[in-house]
Image 1 (cartoon, rainbow, N blue to C red):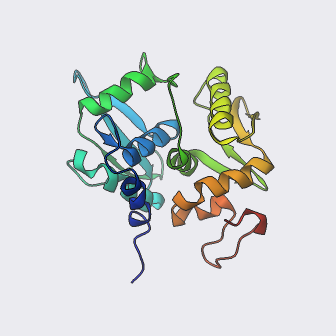
Image 2: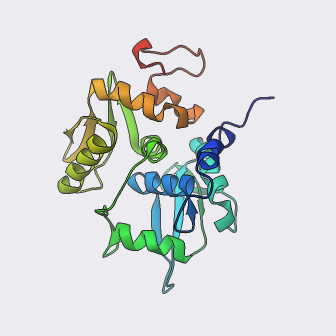
Amino acid sequence: MKPDYTFTVFVWYDVMYKGNTVGSLSLAQNAILIGSLLGDGTLRRQGTRTNALFEVNHSVQYRDYVDWKWKYFSEYVLTAPKSRAGRGVRIAYRFTTRSLPIFTSYFQRFYKNGKKNLPLDLTLDPLALAVWFMDDGARSRSSSYLNTQQFTIEEQEFLQKLLWQTFSLKSSLNRDKSYWRLRISTESTKQMVSIIGPYILPLFQYKLGYDPVTTDSKDESLLF
């Protein structure tokens, strides 16, 4: 039987650090939430509610990825992920958690005046970086990008320093039309692949230069 890579391959992350939590979240939940907030994830308050909820929303073609996130947060969710028609022809696949104090604490750190921003105490680990890359990363030949256009230049420079201080990854600001994003250097892309490779789901292996159909690497120097 084919193993369930969308969940069990990452279970050891919590097992290794059993008993360690960040607030009420496990280390894996915290990492996935942080990575999601750097990418496409959203925290918001509904109406006049005091507490915030966590929303995961991706294209239906990435339903395995949404299901994987949901399995980690299912204890906080009342309804399993569902498809939903978006704008145009896009079909979204999403879930939201309940509005709870644990998510409010992250909301207060990551949002100011309703806009997402980066807290100065932000930290990253390999799983958070992997989720960030699965959410908003891309490959371009031998280098890679993190689509950080939603953040200010100052915040992107902060992320550059964080990537260097945490993982020794070199990056630069790259213009994308009228916005800027982070470009990971060719040398550091190889290093990043070795860091996040064990956490990348099968449907995103192509972002590492890996072909899941033929099991051959498109660039043998990126094998891990």
